[in-house]
Image 1 (tube, rainbow, N blue to C red):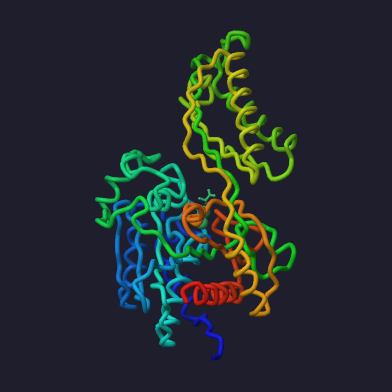
Image 2 (cartoon, rainbow, N blue to C red):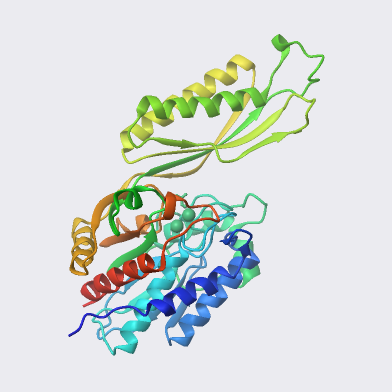
Amino acid sequence: MTALRVDGERLLRRIMALAEVGAIDGGGVCRLALTDADKAGRDLVVSWMRELGLTVTVDRIGNVLGARAGAAALPPVIIGSHIDTVRTGGKYDGNYGVLAGLEVIERLAEAGVVTRHPVAVGFFTNEEGARFAPDMLGSAVHQGELALDLALATAGIDGPTVGAELTRIGYAGETPVGGAVRAAAFLELHVEQGPVLEREGQEIGAVTGVQGISWTELTLHGVSNHAGTTPMSMRTDAGYVAAEISCFVRRLTRELGGAQVATVGHQVFAPNLVNVIPNRVVMTLDLRNTDEQILQQAERQTFAFVEQIAASEGVRVEQRTLARFAPVAFSPEMVARVEAAARAQGRSVRRMPSGAGHDAQMFAPHCPTGMIFVPSAGGISHNVREYTAPAQLIAGANVLLEVVQEVAG
Ligand code: HGY
Ligand code: MN
Ligand code: MN
């Protein structure tokens, strides 16, 4: 039997068509979770699922699965990712994996291949976590890692709750969550979003796992005062404390070295005026490490510093955890399958951890889970300039097709 290959043109056409939805200057996409743009993207992908005759289900947290029947009534092999984006997103983060999953199913159907297990393609709600924290919210609820009612009650950075927005865009589904659907296996194809594959000239990444993620929101309360008349010894400057914290976490990454990363991506001053000492700053800390023990050490050192520097300035601190996921390892059997499929197709491949969070990490504790990476030009992502060449996108989809056929039987 000649090895099946995806229809690359069709895959690329769908990627470009979906990228038109919520398109922003510079070739990027803005489809924050559960916004009208996200709804439009969802509607388009669901229309493609229906065109293929897939059985489409929408669950209580708005995850959407399109399933093709298998020869036996067995648990499905799920190919999943997300189609929500950050505010300055690229065409490929998440979208590529969902559309490659759709292409794999269409290719199997065209070729008349009947797999033993049903094969489903899905997109999960609010993977990015940019509007609602935590990230991977939909897949976490789907697999019982996060309680449904807590997720539905979560307010976004702009106010409305997940539940209200799901109802507003018509994706408050009925299908149960919380582990009601256990997959036979979960596969996710994704752009690397980092520089490793390109730098090493590798075509495929056999992803070994996802690093631990720690997101914290700090609200620093100072005293607003006159920028000109207030002596430095009499200031309670929330802005100064925020600046010290940003510099501390950067220094900490140098001290810890290794995989430790730290990002202050969000910082809002009040009253945010040139001549008023800030009385309030809301800021976020994103700390990540492949090693759970070192990540906990980074958290301990950071929170101790926050307490010390705030006390020295008389600033009161409120601290709220937005997301906390321990590192996850994918099943060695699936990593080996990805590696072997890439090699069988003549692709160079290397094993590597994922720096970014992914829906796959929510499935990994519950079923054999694997991820496939393709290179990101310049290692750029969460940026409108995100790019992966068509040949690389097609190569990744063909590896996915091979692994799905093996796992689905
Ligand atoms: O933050 C992340 O790693 C992912 O993009 N949600
Ligand atoms: Mn992603
Ligand atoms: Mn992302």
